[in-house]
Image (cartoon, rainbow, N blue to C red; front, side):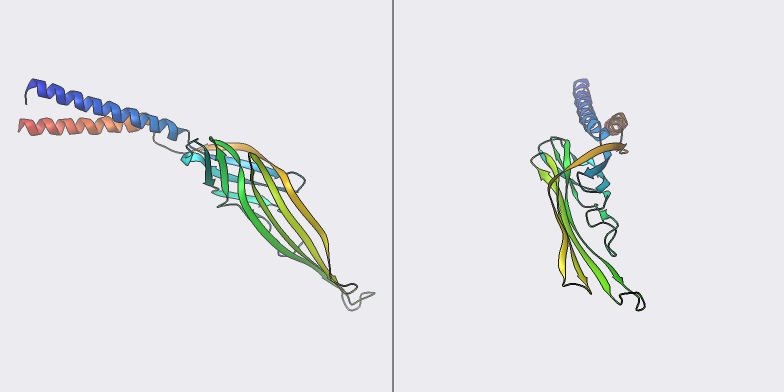
Length: 218
């Protein structure tokens, strides 16, 4: 190989190294910003609250995007703990978090709950025997209306007893109830540093050049 050819080959390899290094560096900058976002939330006029985690590493920051919640719980949505068999909390894993232009908007998901509360008097109790039974049902959802995070819910209690005909009591509807979210913490994801990845690319390119020189010398 002539000196001119060696020079041209060396320039090509150097150019390639710089291109790879630049591309990897740009990717590294984006990845270095990846994090686990920790949020808490509260629902206005409802004794409901909770927390959840979202990994934002897949966000592009362009338009509407959704990411699955990796971990989270919601409490008191919305039947409450006075009913036996009702949920202590809702598991929010798998719900989706909505983003627009990289900014968090709110959660999307729904749930359903039932429970029973009853009392049966002992035979020797004055006025007995008698019974009183409450059956609670509830459904709810969280979503985005435009850019506003909202909550919708419905709850009712069906009562049966020894003293009256069955009837519904305590029906309540939650409509367009605001939800407030608070970012409480971010946990950076372990990702390769741009310089480390770039150094690896340089080393590989150098090895390729040495192998080429050995081959030409043989």
